[in-house]
Length: 114
Length: 111
Image 1 (cartoon, each protein chain N blue to C red):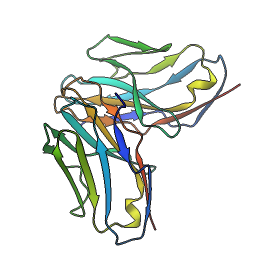
Image 2 (image 1 turned 135 degrees about the vertical axis):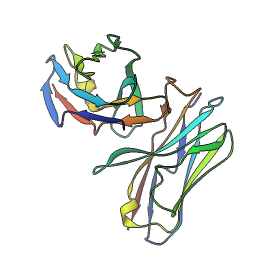
Image 3 (image 1 turned 60 degrees about the vertical axis):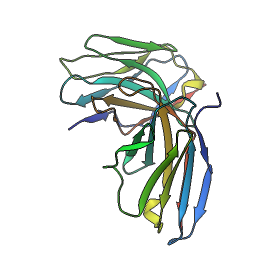
Image 4 (image 1 turned 180 degrees about the vertical axis):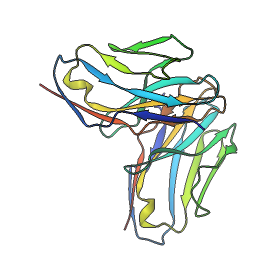
């Protein structure tokens, strides 16, 4: 398996634009997580899904952020409109089962909003 | 709530030196504890884990023991290599499946 695949790897956009980050989890995994990593706040869990259903979105910072998982092999994280403070590395991770199951991380998308 | 505190970096060592990264946690109940490693330009990878008190996780020469009495999970390696240069994250997981991460410790090993 190729692992968790995220695209794009890098994104530079202007303030106010819509940004869509994409994630393909490992086939067969039933949990999917979106994290944000910044120098100031470290790693923060934004939202996670189980069997394509959002379970906990309490980490989503604002209404400008939304996430979907239309099927078991694809998820998106959208920011509309984007702001400079959204600049961060966004990671997607997936796992088979919750609990102690190992979470496998993608390589991340580095977002820069100018 | 759950929280993880790990020693601030950066940590710079010479090859073959002994590495310790301290990690303490606050949690309700009996969490599982993890160390993740992030190599430059990559995502996080699970390094080791421990699920109950006194468990020792080990991998690639790294070890950490779950100490409930001191609420700690310190990471150690007896002889580091240049390839161990990375950012190390301590994390805990409780019944809600969420991983709570520490701030990360950057380790640089010089030849």
